[in-house]
Length: 386
Image (cartoon, rainbow, N blue to C red; front, top):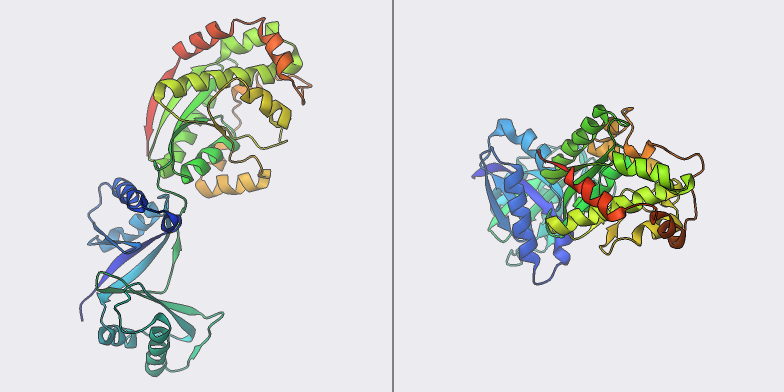
């Protein structure tokens, strides 16, 4: 009886796709190959599963950790692959040693197999009971679940553990967008969540040297690098915002400073999107978290751009955001005490309910087009890879 260790990869939402399902699956497999560059392995697709095989045992744990960050995968099983006829399956299962309580969970993807899933579960459960003393069936809270999958490739996969993965949709399946990346907790999480929905990510950071330090800039570069665990690479645009903030401070009402500043950021972001052929802007705003994130403030900010603005954190509590930041490894960097440009010239009482009419009036005291053009000309671009 020939058997070999494999990794059985599972994907979730893709089964909901229609005629373009195979396009999503091919993209997912391409992303897996890219993630595992430098490792020896082979890969096979079989009826709703991807099988990774022919890898070095010593590299298995590293490969699993890398695969856990691939969007589109919901689970990994360290499985044994054997020929999929019943007598062969029965012989292998009889060699498995278990104790305590158990149940068998069978999936008969290949309907040519002579038993239903329920019949296979029942028969293999009996085999295990006969070959293990002091073993009991528990269908609800067993100590061990033995998974048995019969696939269309004539093979059977047997395992007892599911390793959770990132989920979502394959990176690149939803297009590409620009993330407004500050040095805070929220924006890296927003980028992660939109990447999980299939978006490739570029990022823009607004830097106000000398009011903000070089450490603040390096902090953002580190955050981008940490995100590449999930998005492979990020093209980071660093734009000088110093002159714009000085002009706003000199010419606009203090309570509207943050509002005007964010409107100009959005204009710059849209210009970068047009040049880079990006389809949307992503921000880390959460409704009501600060004055610039009220419903009225968001509306005034949105009014200067025509592209979609994605705000995946809009209904999140701060603790929810912090939990995700910890999970993806950006939290410790985000809380480093280096201020970003949003804290420069911060007014004591920022407007909570701004109006478009008032913002447009104040902007008449600025040469917006010239400021945007000059800021983009200062742009520093770097490609950050995982």
